[in-house]
Amino acid sequence: MLAHPILINRPFGVTSKGTRLCRPSEIVLDILPRPQLGPLEKEDGEIVIDMAGKRVAKST
Image (tube, rainbow, N blue to C red; front, side, top):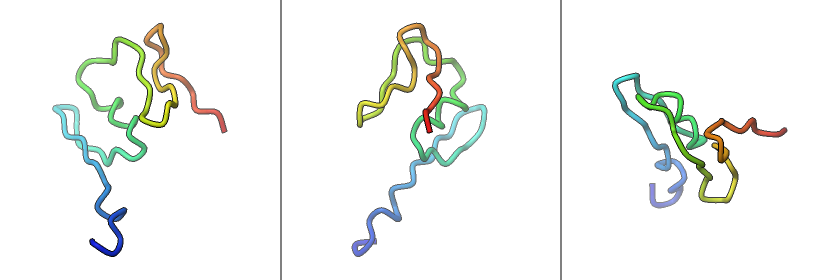
């Protein structure tokens, strides 16, 4: 783990709706018991939920 710390960077989300490996982090939104009501952006500035509370499709 010391040599390769990225291997332990695997966040799990556990709710009444299930358990998910939340990578990328916005996957946790799929198992939240209540929807995200306001805007949400990731730590890198990527917008996940817009001002209207709608999930933003990731552009590829």
